Image (cartoon, rainbow over all chains, first blue to last red; front, side, top):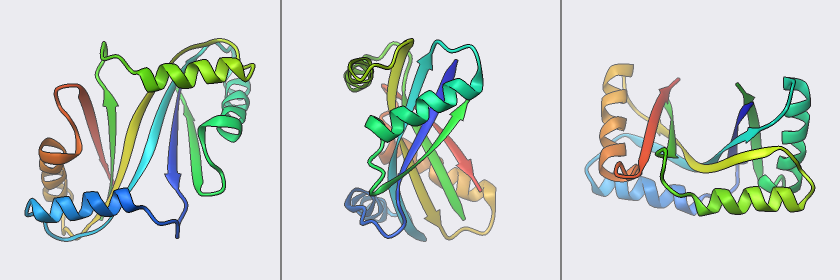
Length: 79
Length: 79
């Protein structure tokens, strides 16, 4: 079973990396860029029989290791 | 207009960060993890009137700055 985890910074949390990307894009001549935010995408291949139990396990992984829930949101997508 | 860019390492490219995550998850007691790959997620808010032109511009951004097309794939999603 394959899962994708999308980890993004919460609204209001400063994202200097995103700002740097926006600035670089501006310098390259791209216009009309209002905001850039950088997050992470983690793909996990896991041996589980059913989606609900895989989802629960991956949610635990996010809470314990993958995401910093103080400043980050995460979304799990299982395919 | 908002766009999400999913940047992942190409198949076959070593991902030491992913391996480290897999190892850490194992150490935490999670079992059945076959593979972990870490990628990036970039969210861009851009002033464009229509989707095709936004897509084209963001594709250019990926080629020129956001992705390293030698080792990375990218997927653009516009909402």
